[in-house]
Length: 146
Image 1 (cartoon, rainbow, N blue to C red):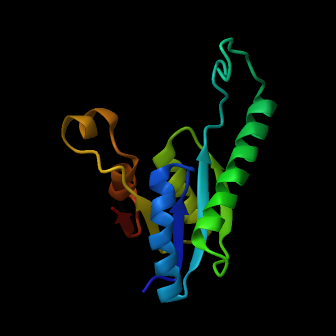
Image 2 (image 1 turned 90 degrees about the horizontal axis):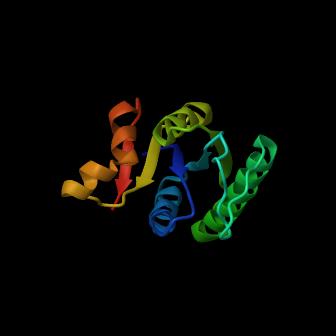
């Protein structure tokens, strides 16, 4: 059915759970897959890994984002299984949904497969939904995994 899936990953539990279903899709359709991680191009004012925050340079921030993305890709590849070879793409964009849509164009994907946090009601309105934003603005189908 689909030939090239774009799958946003972020290392969250929701993202990891969705990868099992993605693996089934890839195997059923013999589809190609590109995993995408979207990072913010601007460093935060301070990182607060300890009780005392410290400033970081643009270069240090990029290195931290690159290292984290590689870790996310490695864990996602493990979750997909040994038989699935996924391409990876890291996008720097402060708007997550715009980064995902940009990645879909660059990867020439024919579907975006995303997991959902399943937020409803007031919580959904206040916290928003990146999945919803992608659905609204995507020019290709978006498959939402529940």
